[in-house]
Length: 260
Image (cartoon, rainbow, N blue to C red; front, side, top):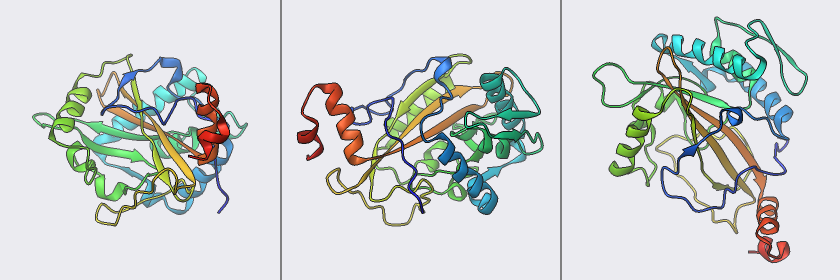
């Protein structure tokens, strides 16, 4: 399969951070296309057509939030168009309100997870998602599960981090989105990398892996349904490119840094 790669990344994925590593997100930066937009969208279309049952799930309890999310995306991208959208790559998309997550999957690079907290529940639950580009997890195993179960088997997601993340989801305010990033080394550049929680999880070091995968993860609250939306914008770069980019910005020799 053809590799789909970005040439650069707007944040420094090599910067150390403590979990959960949250910062305020300017509203204008919520949905920002990049140099891999067209190629990623082609892959999203393929997955939604050939593997829809793996990359899209929506419980009826999450439908109102999915429709509100689609409205919010359309308002953000094109001032509220409701029937058709022209993407940055010039492709027109017909909005299907009966299939809000499918429409979202064909409009933006971002994957979206809908998390809602039922009355008297202790944690938010994943009631819907369009997840074309999973990074070593499977939507089918996480659908309708609470946050703690969603993060199994992440070793760093201990009870302390779980409590902090839940407080974050409880406290995020309408109109004040947040963001964080991660950074994972991979041997291959495939965007669609599902993996069962029970499957072996190889952890290549930076010098062994050819690609760095970083997710810009955004968190915002919808005003009507009060659902929390977790957005995932996936970047995949060649190891040499990401190291060179940040070596130049740091003012060190790119050749020496790339060789590390």
